[in-house]
Length: 621
Picture (cartoon, rainbow, N blue to C red):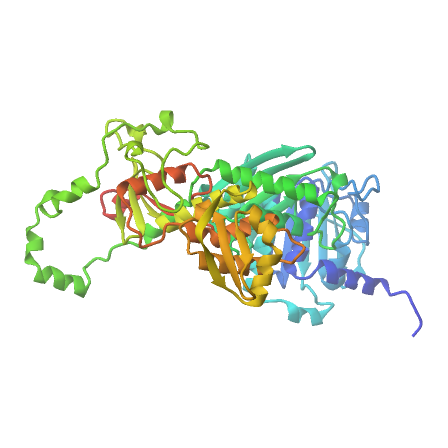
């Protein structure tokens, strides 16, 4: 067959395949047009998830009769006034959406401009364009789409259920609404109003509307400027994550995007703070000059290309890291609340507990006095010296740890014993309170002015060990010479791996020599790991190095390596700690900005507010 020009209708249907994938993708184009038109209110209506009907009504600047006729032609747009694809200041600029939708559906557009007493309507059905007609319509534009894909019925089978299509529509509205707090967005179906985002004064308010109160309480703000780049937004605490990245809202110059550079920057910023299968919740708004970003690389305009991607990635990583560091060791408030919600007592004791009460009559004779039922020595064992400790005034600088908690063997000099709270001065509690007990040889219970804090001793010390390891290894770690070298049997391949990286490992504090064909001799290790199971440590080191290509320097993967071996130098669950040791651990956590979560992203402590506990027991409503 000879080469020929395709008919215009087929060209439009091919374009529709790129732009109009499902109802939500068509709605995205229409809502973006409404935003570009300067609307302050956008009403979206759908039926059957948008399969049979959807419409977008705005109060923007509207279109004249002549503009309506041009709007349904391919590549007709008002958004490139200077014909410069690198000077794009609007969301929609390709001029493909309306003719593409009209080629596969029944399209109707009604519009009126502020300076006109007349409104006009134009229809396009299956690619057939009808002349404009007079109609009644307020200032602004309404676009109605009926029977999507009626002209290409084969594509209907690729649509999902009504519920799935509805959820996709809702997500599109959330994405656009997030970046435009000065616009009201309303979504309705044929029965009710589903969404209503009123106009709010700030991005923060809109983010709270869309993502919810829980994120609002567990996010830290970002507001950074570097050269021609500005980043605003909010990122979640490392302990507040999701199992997928669906709640990551990324914007460049007001446009929602999915970009590998930015997604990679986010992962890099949270490296060592969350698990590999966890995703932080965030809303980030990056602004940069148009000449440094190309938004014309994808038909749906959801991908972009940066001129200086490495510079942008570095800026994002630094900004996010800085924000997380400034949040201190805070952990997600949702964790403590969730723990309390799961602790709601039943109305009656279980049969097992009922029998205990029946068989132990003396329980009914208990006095209201705690001393009658609690061994008297408990009161003294868990009491600290009565010395004032002011958080607001006397809290040491976070860069100068004051406790004597050892990295490998926790110990506290009696002279450094943390003071007890001053019961007459509410400000004398440190942030994580004072240790009162150790439960199940794993959990430290401490008390603050208005809460009870439960700390996982292993997870907390693991984080502290990781941070010290990362810092020391990056600056030539101090080493501990082993009096008797540890000889470890490995496979020939594993021995070769360590031998090839011997010089790099030495810089990180590991002096390891080959000892025969299938053994190595460990002569020095980082001083922080002096009490470690060396055999397990070396095996983990081999496993970690094996994951990297020979061209990758270990110093570039220090965080990964530290994350793998931090457990070995940490206090284990099951280790009995003294009150002094527990308090020393809490004080060190307060000096570490990332101490709210372990290296796997799990919380190191939970805080149970006294008000919530009292409500649990019916003391408060």
